[in-house]
Every structure is written in structure tokens, then in C-alpha cells.
Amino acid sequence: MNHHHHHEDTRIEGQSSLSEREKLGKLLEFWIKHNDDHVNTYREWSKKAGSENLVEVQHLLEEASELTLSINELFRQAIKELH
Image (cartoon, rainbow, N blue to C red):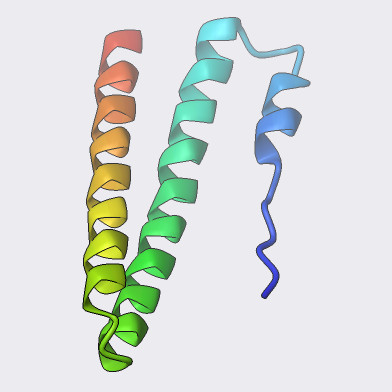
């Protein structure tokens, strides 16, 4: 299994024409999207675990997806504070 990360964050950090505030806003938006991708993967594998009767694994993956969504909410609040 191979997980490929797009490291757009380093490209954002290297954009000297953006202020630090603008870079942070773009990074937060990127992190939200990136986390949403992970949530989809966690939920996909949670269903697969459920089909294998791995009830505890299914539950833990669902919990991980909910925690990740909570992190995204913190990132959204941070974006609001930037504006």
C-alpha cells in the first residue's frame, strides 16, 4: 500500500510574494483538503474492516475520521481569525 502526499505546503512557503498571513491561510486551506482526503480513506477502510467483522478496528477508524474532522474545524476557526 502506497500513500502519496502532495507537498504543496512547501511550495506555498516558498512563495516570497505572499505575506506570512497569506501563506498561513493557504496552508490551512491545504491542510483541510488534505485531511478531508484522509477522512475518506479512513471511512473506506472502516467499512472494509466492518465487512471483515473487525468491529473494534471499524470503530477506531471511524473515531479517527471524527477526530480529523474536529481538527479541520480548528483550522477553519484559525482561518476566520486571519480575516
